[in-house]
Structure formats: structure tokens, C-alpha cells
Image 1 (cartoon, rainbow over the protein chains, first blue to last red):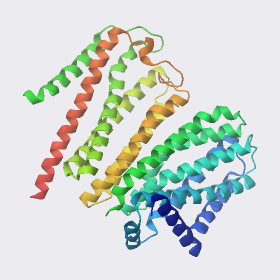
Image 2: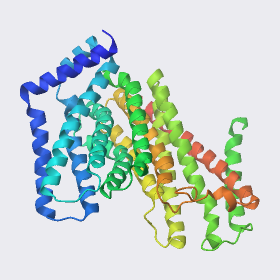
Image 3: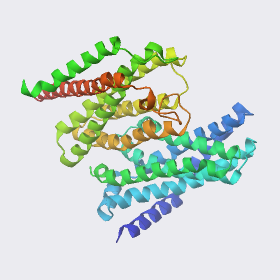
Image 4: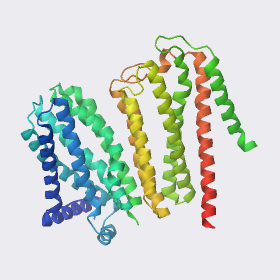
Length: 218
Length: 220
């Protein structure tokens, strides 16, 4: 099997496993919805800057929780089995892509529910949605590798400590990008931010592909 | 003695930059006034930090390909000494900011980026301490170190250039070299940078040797 087929098979395996129990996905969806509700009940009304920042903070915590599980939930024996069947690159790539799918779903649900309870005017809704989707892809690509590192250390609290400093540059760019969309600025203004996001994602995925072969062998 | 010439050079250069930095003539600029002399102390700290973290990156890569325990020791000790220079850079910067920008912690992207970068390296040290088994600790922290380095580069050199910043060379401001840094200042600034980098490497080698001795004692 070549890399592409291996990745395809592994992603299908993840989806089938998830579909059987539906425990993780329902848990995380419930988590994000109840977090949004807690924020709504404590803030009631917010000004646009807080609205935007609050949304990204909710997304940050939800995605840390969603992705931290990606390596922990499977037993060591089963992971060893995958490693004998597929290459290291295929394993990490399939995890990243699967997490991207999860995050896309999560972010669509989150932004839908968030804008439903928190009323706020967005100047360019389509572009705002684009920034949310870009954000979820970036979260997935960064957190997957870090959850792999944290799972080796067998320490739950470590995930947040390791990932927050790494995600902050992305978060700054994302907040700026989505603020531009909220203010309804011309789309050409935000091209710089999209470029930086794409560049960071490419760097992070490349580094993950290079480093994961060293991480998995235990 | 032939191997230690660079330590002598480091001491002479740093001594020269302190004496020269405090006594030599500097350009008289509004707002900055005499505080411009801080350039000789604040900026070299960041140069040294970057050099030390780069050494750490190189030795982390070396560790992953060789598995040599000493490479891991160099990597962790360069992070340890790099953090010293991060703290010094932040403190000198805060002092400078207090007198020129009016607050010790102005809302400046470069400042915030530097603080986040230091958080990242502190997380590296926490990650190390969370594992007991030495080889595993070395391997996993090396992986995190390599993963964190490009993010630090983005933080320090890309993001501050995209927004408004008080620092020269960022947010459309001209770099310091453009017109403020006259030849008189370069005469002190470059030796200061080289001197502090050498001092940083010196601290690193000392800490590395102490760690090696400790390991030897523990093994016995």
C-alpha cells in the first residue's frame, strides 16, 4: 500500500471506530455547547471585540479537549499494531486529517450556536466563516503533534502547557483575521493574515511529518 | 590556554562594551537621550538568546539522529542559559520602556511575543521534568524543542512586523541601523553583541560540564 491508501484506510478506521461509540464526538459537542451557554449566561451582552475574543477562547479550550484524546484513547498494544501495518507518516497524517474533520464539524456547530444565542452583527459573514474554518484546520494541525508528545508523558495537564504557547501566534492572527471580517473590511486587506496562517500550517505539518517517526517508536 | 582564548576575548569585549557604552559619545536624540546607551545591553541579550536556542535546536536534532546522551545535555543547558538571557532581555527592555515609552509593559507585539516565546521554553523544561526515564525524556523533549523553534521564529520575527509596534524595524518603522546607529555606536555595539554571545556560550559550556560531573557522580 502506498502512503495515500494507508492514510485513507486509517482515516476510515478512525471514523468507523468513532461511529460505533459516538462517545467522543457527542462529548465534545456537548462540551462546546454548554461552554457557550455558560458564557452566554454570564455575559448576556458583549461588545464586538469581546464577542470575537470570547468565541476564539471557547474554540481554543474545546479543541484542546477534542484533540487531547486522539492518542490517549487507543491502547498501546493497538497502536503498536498500526505501526507494524502502516508507516509513521501515514499514522500522523491520518490523525491530522481526521482531527481536521472533527474540528470542522465542531467549529460549524460552535459558530452556529454561538451566533444564535449571542446576537452580534458580522459585516462579512462568509469571510468570518472562512476564518473559523481556517482556524479549526490550524488548531488540528498544531494540537495533533502536541497531543502525541503529551500522551508519551502520560500527563493530562501537560497538553495545555505545551500547546498554549505554540498556538498563541496562530490565535493572534486568527483574531485579527476574524475581526477584519466582522468589521466588513475589504477582503484584500486580510490576504496577509491568510498567507501567514497557511505558512504556519505548512511548517507545522512538515515538522510533524519529520518528527513523528522519532516519537512513535517506544 | 590556547583553547580558552575566546573566553578571554569574551571578557575583554564585554568589559569594553560596559566601559565604552557608558563613557563614549552617543547621538543626542529626542525622547531617547542618554537611555540610548541601553542599546548596548538590551539588544545583545536577545541576540545571545537566539544563538543559544539555535544551539539547542541543533543539538536536539543531533540527539535524535545519534542517541548520544551528551547531545541532550547540551540541548537542555542551552535552553537553561537561554532563559537567563530572556529574563535579562525582558528586564533591560522594561527599564528602557519605562523611561522612553512611559510604561514598563507597553502594549507592544514584540514584547508579548518575547514573553510567549519564553513560556514555550519554560514548557519545555516542565515537559522534561514530567518524565523519569532518561532516554525517553531526552527523545520527547528533543521533539518538542524542534517543534517549538519555528514557532518562536514566527513569534519574534514575523508577527511583530505585521502590526504596529514601538520597536524599530517593525510595523513600518525603519530599523535602528537606518539612521540612528552611527559609526560611533557601531564601534561599541558589534563588540558588545559578540562579547555577550561568547559569554552565553561560556555559561552553557560551564553548565554542561557541571551536569556531566553530576551524572558521573550519580552513576557511581
